[in-house]
Length: 344
Image 1 (cartoon, helix red, strand yellow):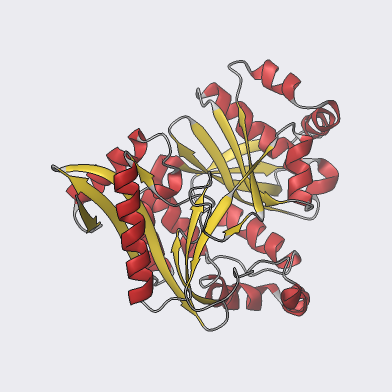
Image 2 (cartoon, rainbow, N blue to C red; image 1 turned 135 degrees about the vertical axis):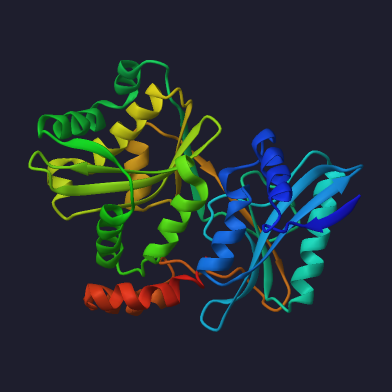
């Protein structure tokens, strides 16, 4: 068995990699080869997309990126900006070989730690962070059954949005989405991803990356979501809204419209993504009748004694969050990409 590195400049290698990912039941949208180009070109991080090959056949993949920041540490991660990651392999031997190469590479690069974002726990003896859960639920074959499956109070919010005359549209670009997204994260005191990142997602993944925008009865954009499609799943991944969205139930209507349209397309799983317990997004997803599944982010620590806590819940970032909220939006959108590229 050999451990090789994907060269995204070679279409035949990319095609082989993605064919493996689409066929492997534990692989996710974030294992796709296109992330190598996006992380390298948009964020300028070195990438190491490893694959195990035996007898000319791919046996496993492990996408990694090296994020080295004075503010947030030096890490080799599988994969930055992704909810899921880690190894997807056909055999334990392939998985072990890929992880051994990842550890060797992390030490060679002088990192503080290696992080692998698994859904299931793989190593009981590795330090693990169980900060996040994910929410996934089956989409029923009939639209009306999906409406009835929503708990009563949440269903009333969806019907409120419908009564308010809200409409949804699939956008050809990212402009309306980005305006709502950037304003939303600014209100929460966190830096925004650059607009060119979202454009790169659209350019790279094509129809598998889609923007849905909800408008008022008068045509004003209120709420928008950028979703990924992978096999028979839809993953609403980035979202933003106007301050008026809450009173009009635009966010509730938005996710119902996404579910309704996915149902019409034959999509079978709605993946609401990760949240931290005790937060508003966690409660919102529970209100839809989704049950949480624990995520296991496993670490190998080399130059640190504890797992890093680079998230808004960390008390040391409270002053930064408060300052960011007061910053003019135009300045925040200019400065944000320089910071967020290192958060991963």
